[in-house]
Image 1: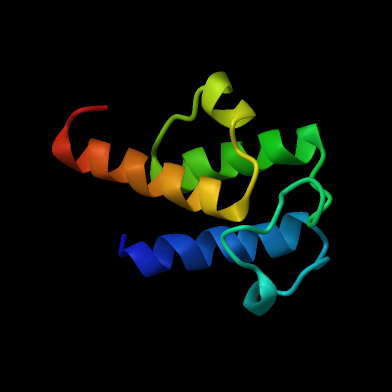
Image 2 (image 1 turned 135 degrees about the horizontal axis):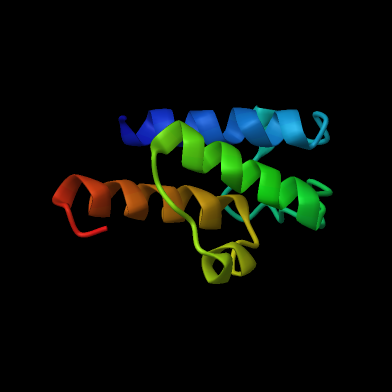
Length: 89
């Protein structure tokens, strides 16, 4: 999947799970998942499960705990996909 496609998919999923609290066009890398989007722990776990299914990657509990912003999620998924492509994950 192309880098921009990864970001677009994640942003659209964030709009969905946050009940449209912030439109996709207004989200930035620094948008806070909890404060700005209102993501609860349960919603964050569900989001990660969707990400894992969509991209065929695994996110550890420790990685989940460090996801604070939209940019964190996008960066993590891109890194995981690069590792998967390189055969290092």
